[in-house]
Every structure is written in C-alpha cells, then in structure tokens.
Length: 278
Length: 308
Image (cartoon, rainbow over all chains, first blue to last red; front, top):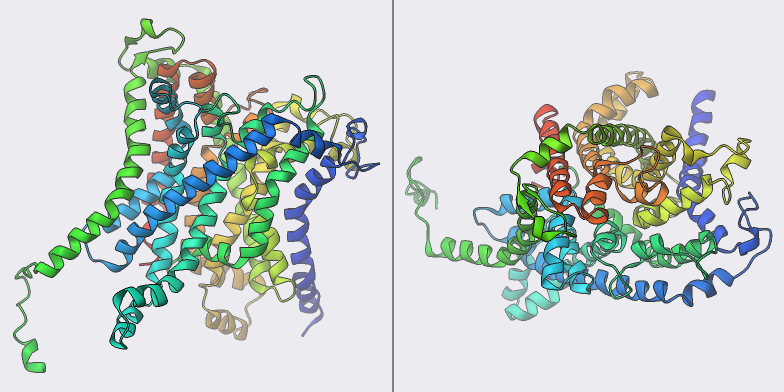
C-alpha cells in the first residue's frame, strides 16, 4: 500500500460520509435554527440564534391557516395514497402473475404519466372543478394527486411483485393449506413490504405537491401545507413571517424524518427496485 | 416423455388459444382496468380538454366573450419574446442542475458504495432532502441567502449583496435548492447502477495495473451507462417542469420565470385559460420531445428501467 492510496483511502472512509451528511443536513439544521430565533433576533446574520424561543411554534399552532392546512395535508395525502395503492396492488398483481397482451403498454403508460408536467393539467381542472363544485375541496385534490401517486405505485409494486416466489403459494396448497390460507400466510407476508414501500413513496409525493395545491384551492377548506406556507403572514399581517414559516416548515418535515428513520432500507429499495436491469 | 415433444405443433402454426389462456387474459384485463381507467381519466381527459381550451380566446372573468380562435393562441405565445425568455431560463436551469447533480450524485453514490463506517447514517441523511417538501427547501435556501434573515453573506464576507435582485444570482440560488433537493434521487439511481458493475472487472483492471482514474473511465462508467442515462432522463424531465422553487423564491421576478410558472400565471392568476392552455400544451410537447430525443438519440431502453 503506497502513501497516496493510504491518503485516498482515509479520505473516502471518513471524508466522503462526513461531506454527504453536512450537505444533506445543513439546510435542515438551518431551518430548525431559524425556527427557534425570536422575532427580534431573526436578522442577527448568524446561523444559530442568539437566544432560543418556542414562540414561533406557539404562533403556528394558534394560526388556523396552518392547523387546518396540516389536517388537510394529512388526510388528502393519506386518502390519495390509500386509493392509489389499492388500485395499483390489484393491477401490479395481474402484471406480475398473469400473461395477457397489453401489460407492457400499461407499464409504459404509467411511466409516461409519471413524467407528465402537472401544470399542463391545472388549467382544465381549474375550469372543470369550478363548474362541477370540486374546486377547493378534498376530492378536488385527491383526484389530481392520483395522477402521480397511481403510476408511481404501479411502477414500484410491479417491480416488487416480480421478485416474489409465487410458486410458494402452490407449495403451501400441496402441503394441505386452503387457497385462502396459502394467500394469507404465504403471499401477504411476502407482498406486504412492497405495498408498504409503495405507500411511503406515494405519500411523499402527495405531501410534497405544490402545483395542484396552489391552483385548485382558495380557502382553509382544502388548502394543504405547501400552499398555506406560501400564504403565511405570521401572527399579524405586518409581522415578518420568516420565523413562523420556519417553525411550520419544521413541523411538516417531522413526519418525513420519522418515516425515513424507520424505513430507510425500504425506501432505498423502493426507489431503486429494478431501477436498472438486474 | 421425449416422444410427446414431437407431437408439439410445428413452427409457424399458431398455437390455439386455450380456454385457460383466454380466461387468464380476461382476468388480467379486469384487474388492470381500474388502474388504466383512473390514469387516463386524471391525465388524458384534462390534457385533451387543455388542447380544446387552447383554441379559444377564453378568460374566466368574461366567459360570455369566449370565442373560437383556432391556433391563434399558439401564434401569440410563440411570437412573444417572454415565451422564449422563459424557455431559455428553463433550459439553463435544467442543464445546470442536471449536470451538477450528475457529478455530485455520482460522488455520493461512490461514497455510499464503498462506505464502511456509518452506512445507515449516510443513507438516512441522504433520504431527508428526497422526502422534504420542495417548498420547505425553497424557503430554507431563500432565508439563508436573504439580506435580512440570511447568514450566507456574513459567512462569505459578501456584505449586503442582494442575491434576489439580479437574474443570474437568483437563478443560482434556485438551482442550489433544486440540486440539494433532488441529488439524493440521482445518487440512489447511480448507486444501483454502480452495484451492477462486476467486481471481477475492477479486480482484473487493478491486477493489470490500471490507475484509479483509468478504472473509473474505462470500467465503471461504461458499465453503468444505462443507469446514468435513465437517471439523467428522469431528472431532466423533472427539472424542466420546475415550479415550486421559482414561486417561493422570486415569484418569477428578475426574469426567472420558468415555462411551468408562465402557464400557471396565465391560467390561474390572469385567468386567461385559452392562452394559458396553449402554454401548457407547448410545455407538454417539450417534455415529450425531450423524452423522445433521449430514447432515440441515446437509445435509452426504458423497458430495462424496471425488471425484464
């Protein structure tokens, strides 16, 4: 081992990971720090607060704009995720297990729709929703959210289901299990992690949406968090909202961090499941 | 057993569709029908509607004056300097972000591939930007560079440099936020590609005395060409529809408007549905053109993207 290799080895062993962690976490720590700055100290020009306060969190939780947005975001994202995952599970099961013409076409369609520019749908939906009363409602967001959560789920689940050893179902039946038992005891435990991963990824997308959120809502009735953040003005109309927005941003980042911490391996597997030939 | 094989139908004679195959097909179509119907209903129908709306002079504030104008809206858009300016801005941002992400993403993928200590910590922290709301990322970077609440000018001794009062400095911050948020996706796809490079080849190259650099350019990169192209295609299409960061950071000021933002502003803020729809359709066509160029030009095999 020569000197240069030793140096390079040490750099990749410690330097690389440290660089990745700093790059990924710095903005998160910054918004966290900003959320603890008092209103008077927000312009201290430093990374960390001079004095720490929880005032901003009190403000956001006392602002109906934020609390209703939080409720809207949670339910709209969960419902859109649940519906897409159910429909996608059935479809992906068929794609993985049955031979029928057109299944490649369905996967290509899902891919094409996932690449669709959301803004292209906004105008017509705005027009149609206003005339049929879906504008500014939960359903009015759940439906367009499925335009990306559904293709994403079909895509992820077909990749997962392809890896499942389906012949185990027959093996269990030969061993005397009924077909329901075989499905429940053998297939469900094998398929559940994939379904769950697809749900996490779909939820991230729905939780993140801004284009539909800002275009198809106008009041607290359905406006989700990303759109509410853009309208946030803080405790009073004239207060600078930076600190309050940061606190709200931290609150909506917590679910993401929790999901990532708990399911890191599954999310990575879901994102790269058969991402390349393998 | 081998005797029965000779009884198999000769090549060229169509295999008769058995009742079993037919019922399997029917079941397959039945199970996938809801997915196909929903996907078409939420995208194809509005898209056709957008195409239709784009041929009218139609403002929501004045529905009575709605009038069929054929392709005139497209003429208006395409002959307007503003359209070409937003296309230019969008292309510049797309090229910069995808190029930088490819480099950083590859470096991160290398780190994750070779990592010994802290594997879990690194993979967890890299997923956080992926999961974070784009709007939150936009606010974080905006406040970091802002004159009043920011720390960046202090750290780098830039005094009171106003990042958001110039076109290119605004675009720089927009790109930073976009790059930060989406590099993890790129690096995870590249990591999957790296895992496909046979370790034997690396060892063989090492034995033959290839340097680190030679192994990278002659062994690693050529073997993961497919993964790189797929990652670049996905990110290019995603970057081209950039909207959230621009909305939060500049709201299109200082000539930072992107195509998506222009479409939004025409349709929702100005309620000019006809003209806005024409912009939407043009945006959609650009995305299709980019995808087609990749698939034809670089021979990206999308069927190899997942399985098969």
